[in-house]
Amino acid sequence: MFGLSIGQFVICVCGALAVTGEYSARTIEATLTATPRRALLLTAKTLTAAGAASAWGLLVAAACFAAGQAALSASPAVPRVNAGHAIASIIGSATALTALALLGFAVALLVRRTAAALVTIVMVLLLAPTLLDPLSAAQQASIGRFLPLQAADELVLSHPVDASHLPPWGAVGVLAGELAALLLLAFALFAKRDA
Image 1 (cartoon, rainbow, N blue to C red):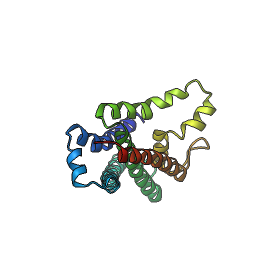
Image 2: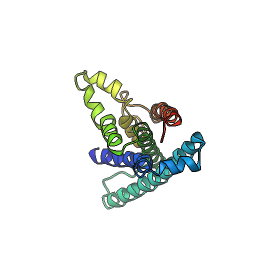
Image 3: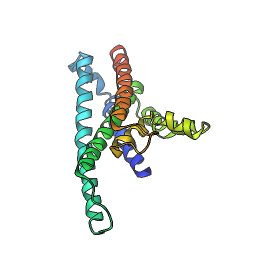
Image 4: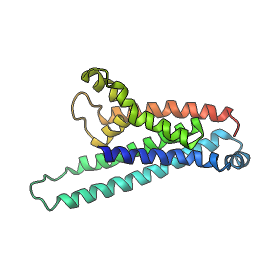
């Protein structure tokens, strides 16, 4: 699970760098001069980031699944994976990585600095679950499943483990709602701020 969290953090960083790289190099001014319609510019940047993350997510998920199957095929004691669950897990993994890349993208639009974006991403993804520690286990489970990293993890599983976990479509809804709110806020601020 820790390795998966690191990989998810890396894709968030890539999403953030898609934005902050332009600010740190000061090329955002030239971009806004060339494309003064900010909504169109930001929509294109968002779709480009989502497309790149989706392609990368599918490639990585399929490669990891194939490598895992090859490693496990030598052992007759390991049951074979149902093709439907495998495809759902690969697509879920790619969807989770795309959502997390867009989370990094939206956070970077809000703060416009690489260091601030990275600190915010670490706080949201890795430290937010620790805020639930004072709560009971049942409360942690019911609230924690709505955190971005936990919702993304549910997509990788492709089926709920128990009642405390979100079903895949519920996880998609949670991530979509969180991303929509962040992206709308980021779009609104981007439209009003100077470069």
